[in-house]
Length: 385
Image 1 (spheres, one colour):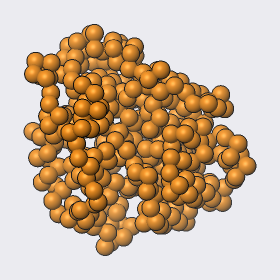
Image 2 (spheres, helix red, strand yellow):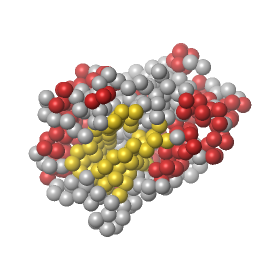
Image 3 (cartoon, rainbow, N blue to C red):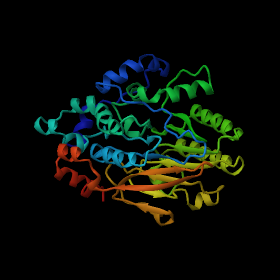
Image 4 (cartoon, rainbow, N blue to C red):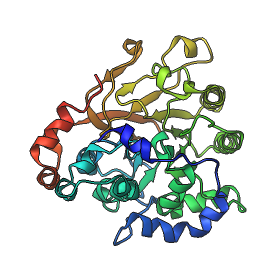
């Protein structure tokens, strides 16, 4: 089945009919019922860090788990859990939406009875919960929004309702009200504190982002961070990379609004790094390869400076060829799956290492379910070049 078949059956949703405030009122009930989970999956939360203030701790991150994510993400979970991370952070693009994900088509129940469009659209996010969140067990799971979460008939508002269990997890709810006691709105952008680090999840899933409200919120957050001597580190994650990266052809440069607002956010982060002396790290996915040093470009070398940046769109999506200029990166890999492991030292400095996932890392139960031929297809054939 092709994307054309699916798109012929899908009508675009026009406008944004629901206010986020309404989302909050119904989110808790809908989040469980729509995912079809028999028992709640643990939302994001704190508490995994060692009590010693001098402890070294880790966290894991990756994005883009459509296509073969039901095969790759359980392997990521199994490998990451060996390092006892404090959390896992998904940077968006959960399922394809515009067409059928190959892993869902190859689930035994759908091999026996071919999946319909209605089956797919009604079950793609429940599939993500069951096959890509549950493998992490009780590890706090932080969830970003990608552009595929807004492909019709899906919308940002639906995403917030469906995943309210995670987007309004206690640690996020409490931080939001600590920042603003009147802020009852669940959003796809948020922040939380781990140790001496502020983790900020931004929403640039659509080309109208970052909008003025999100930029204002972000700059208020940075202002607090810059004034807090106990806060050493700022880690910003999003789906699309900020503008003028090595991957600028598939980034926030895809729209004028994204280019302008993304440059502003980048300049804000430079100020936090250079003037407030915070350690700043920027993570993204969207492009389906691994790259370290994504902002080492002529533009940023001559417009303020180069921020440490990574692209890790390697959690199962169809792999892309590396872009022109990838030789400027510190490291660039494609046709690989894997995740970033961040190791945080007591001073808030973070070392990032890419952990590649091999076919041998896929749990036996996953191989048994999808069969060796499909697992092999994911690793050998799931590429656009």
